[in-house]
Amino acid sequence: MAINSYAKINLYLKIGRKLSSGYHNIQSVMQKIELNDSMTIEPIAEDKIIVECTNKELENEKNLAYKAALLLKSKYKVRQGARIYIEKNIPIEAGLGGGSSDAATTLLNLNKLWGLKLKEKQLIDLAAQIGSDVPFFMGEGAALVEGIGDKIKRIKKSFSINIVLINPGFRVSTKWAYSVFDKQKPKIKTKADIKNLVKAIEKKDIKEIANNLHNDFEPIVTKKYKMLNDIKTNLMRNDALNACVSGSGPTVFGIFNSIYEAREAYFKIQYDYPFVFLTKTI
Image (tube, rainbow, N blue to C red; front, side):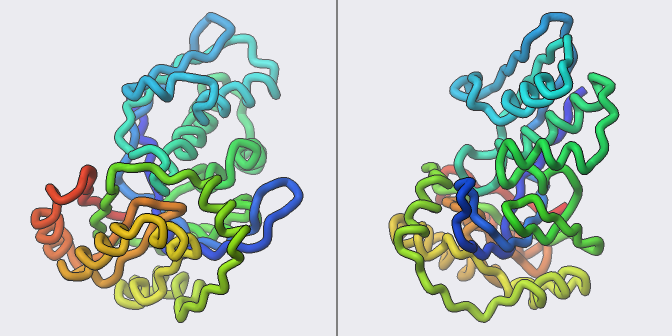
């Protein structure tokens, strides 16, 4: 059975201090979107983890889905193995959390397939060991995410927001983005407010959501990759209420008042960039 492993966008991302663990404290509002990888996970009698992927460069032990399976297997001394197949649709190193989502999907489904019966808290603790975005993907919809990504408060009344996502076809390393942020320690002024954003989501107020989009990584990645500002401008010119870089980039998303405006923008710019997706939040 194919399992959908959904991407995310950051509607808000504030970066705090770096900890001795190497992680940073963050304050973010993350939101799942319809764009997804399709995964098949099955138990096998052989005592090993096999990862197969439509993108062959991901068939290795650095794959976060592999790391998730191995961590679960080692910690709970599971004697059987698993075959994980990933049809990769989410661009890699794109600020969309594709690898983290695949890892969370692996944990959730192997917990069932291996009959481990672990509680959500146990799974989130494991997820946090794999990467700071992984715990978010253990639940649904939108969430206020704090700490090193391990403090998660679900936003109960999240709703469908129409989005056009543009990925320019190159990758940005999250490690690089954090290292530049730590060196520059930029003082970023913004009128966006995370509390107002959460309230706007709960009230389904699309214009107020648009007014409170923010990402601390944006000045860093747009300075190095000037075309990201051009992408933002292009989305705004095509009636996006606002546009923002997701995560450490380089994907830019625009949010729209309705599916009609989002669809029209998509048709106008779908051939301008390597990856253009018409999608929505879930």
